[in-house]
Length: 91
Image 1 (spheres, rainbow, N blue to C red):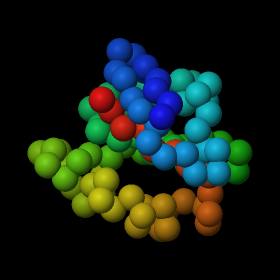
Image 2 (tube, rainbow, N blue to C red):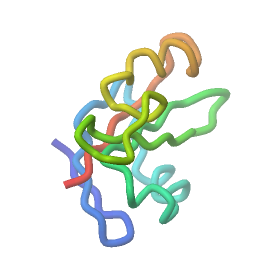
Image 3 (cartoon, helix red, strand yellow):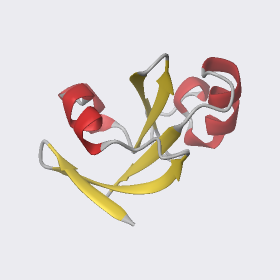
Image 4 (cartoon, helix red, strand yellow):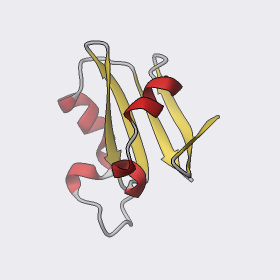
């Protein structure tokens, strides 16, 4: 399992579909906005990395839109068909 530290937060790359994980791109796109999330999902569209934050179900900030249990729905409805993506889980 790959590990990365982003602004003092440690993450494990728990899923890497079609080699979607690119350390340099993630470092360039990451902002402190994502520190609060339990997961960061990065997907590729038109050669550009997009990031989205998700929460565990037990997190009080969790809503349907950012519930990690709805990741498949997000990928199907909001991402390019069969795109490369990765999931980083905050430690």
